[in-house]
Length: 347
Image 1 (cartoon, rainbow, N blue to C red):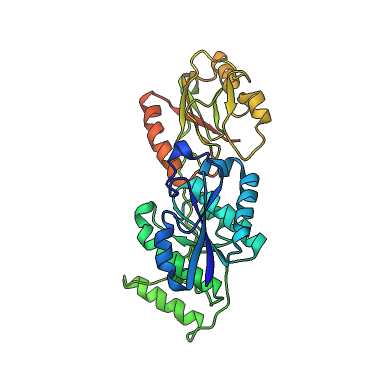
Image 2: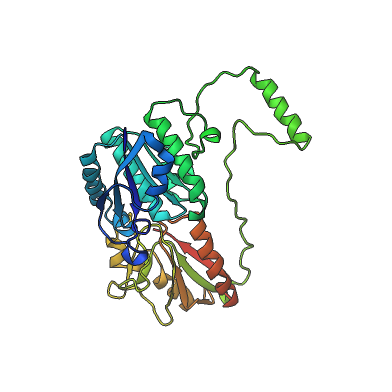
C-alpha cells in the first residue's frame, strides 16, 4: 500500500477563509476536504494517511519556520508520496504548495506533485523542480484536476516512464529529451507547414515563448502642466497597513491620499512587502515611493503637479492575473482624474 500525505490550506481544510490565513501548521489523520476526491482517484493502490493544513499567510510570512514544522510532521508518517493542492490560481497557496513539495522532495527523496493554473506564481517558481498538473483558473476545475494529479502521482511513485506534458497534463518544465521518430525532422517540419497553410490542425514540436508586449504611449508634450501619479509594487502603505495587503501573493491593492504630504517618514509610512530586507524602506519610504522628489519637481515647475492619491500593492509572488485585474481597475480612475502619466516603482 502506497502511503500518501496531502497538503492543503486553511480554506480547503474547512477552518476558514482569509481571516484564518494566519493559522500555524497542523496535521490530521486521514483525508480532509479535497482529499476525499483524491482518495477515490488514487484507488486501492494508495492510502492518504495524513493531511497537513496550514494558513496561506502564515506559510508565506514564515517560510523557513513553516517548512521546517511541516517537514517534521510529514516525516512521522514515512510516506511514499506527497501531494499538495491543487492550488488553481491562488497565489499564496501555490507558492506554499511548490515550496513544501520541493522541501519534501529534497529532504525525503520521495515523489511529489501539485496542481496549479499556469499563471500561478507558484507554477512559475517551481515547474522546473517538480511535476505540476495544469489546472483551471478556479476550483470549478477540481473534477478535472484531481484525477490528473492522481494518475501522474501513481506513475511517479511506481517509477513508470513519464511522457511529455501534452500526454500527462503537467506544466512544461523546460526539460528536453532526445527521442527517435519514424520520420526525420525535415519531413515532419514540412508536414506541419503544409497543415498550417491548409488551415488544418497541427501541433508544433517546439512552442515559442509568448511575450506580453506593451507599446509605450507617446511622450508628454507639456510636462509643466501634466499631472503625474505614483504607483508602486513595493508595498508602501500608511503605518499599520490599514488594508492588510499581504506580504506575498497579494490579493488586493491600496489607494492612499497624499494631499499635503511632502515626506514619507518612518512614523507615518512603511512597507508591507515580504521577500526583501524592509529596514531601509521603513526608515524612509521615499526610497521606494519618491514623494519627496516629486514635490521638489512640483515646486520647481518641472511637472504640473503630483496626483493626490498613490496606488500600491506587493509584487512578491503576486499572480499575473491579479496584477492585470488591479491595473484595469485603478487605471480607469487615473484617467478619470486627469492623470497624464504614471511613475511605476518597485523594490
